[in-house]
Length: 152
Image (cartoon, rainbow, N blue to C red; front, side, top):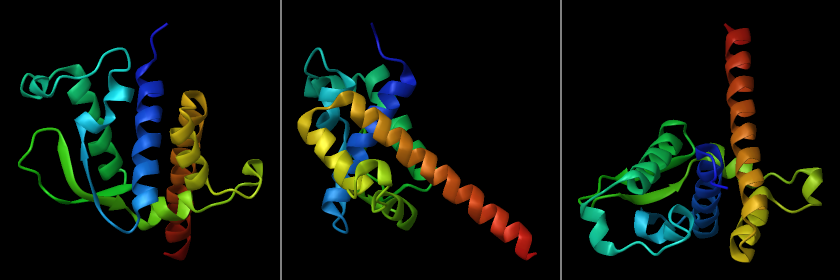
């Protein structure tokens, strides 16, 4: 059974968050070829295919662009390379969410749990955790908007 776009998005997002959390505050370049195990799990991506593009490459680009536009990650430099985002790091909002320690995780941070899920290849857990991070981000944004509106 093939995964839905939301499931693929959650899995890719989880790995992106994990990598950026583990390297924070050091920036990383995010290149589509580094995520081939998620984007194309049944076959290795050929580096030459990057010039042809296609759905897998567009999915990667659109996911990372959405994470940037939603305020979870920052890419500090435009890349001359296709399907690459250079000098990426977590935003303060994303770092705060990933450092949270929900009681459901038994004292472990969301970021640490995400990193462990990536390392263990726990795909289902990775999707759930990424979804939780994004939900918490939505909650933070809603609370901030309400607080701002009430202060006016």
